[in-house]
Image (tube, rainbow, N blue to C red; front, side, top):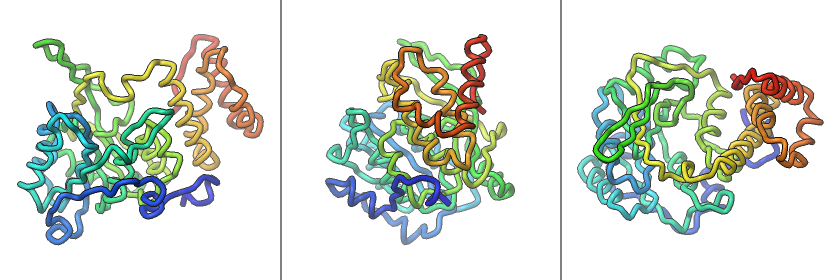
Length: 325
């Protein structure tokens, strides 16, 4: 479906490895391929320096009450705080269920001059065998043991949808006090999503972004709609303020966001006006001092993008801010 949507390159696993892998990734010995040959769902858990949270993240996956086979694929990006040891212990105890990939920092890809974990995200994504893909971060938790079953049941019975997601809330520990935010369902946070697995190839542009989940969601939405489920629990995100995104300044986050939205527009905008609206909204929100020279051609050459831009710009000028749908 994607080939004619953009001149930028799409990569399969071999092309990805040839371009980006410097050191071979080690898969910890297991029996998953032999004893669990056709999982309906693969749960992809990405972790780095999550020692206080990783045990709970793994256990909430293993506790899922389901009527189908699934495997848990864990990728650790060379944690040095004890996270890797915990992952290895679980892999030893559940060799039929857990595939553990031990990554090396030498493979880290620099995004905007900052090394990040996008290599391990992409590498592990290519290993996912299930027809459906669930995500969870090593510092998040699922609150319901019925989460996977209910999300998969919905996708099995509603072929017009390609992803389902849940509400989320953040958990912050301040001294001895634990503070929870109100549940929020305005945005599909990665750890709440189950996708149809359409990720046999990925855009090279995804590997230059800190917002890889936005790429994954855009890819999934080429095949159907998204759906919020309210009866399958929610996710709890441990907010530590120490991840790569949180450490960025507001200006850096703005630049990362517009970079991502521009690449998504270039990949999918011809057919998917959601990407046009998202990109136009980002452009309209740029401060007047921002340099738009690089972006002017997009507006000049795409009349509908220009219309969306002025729609958001005028609403912002009138104090009627509206987010793109």
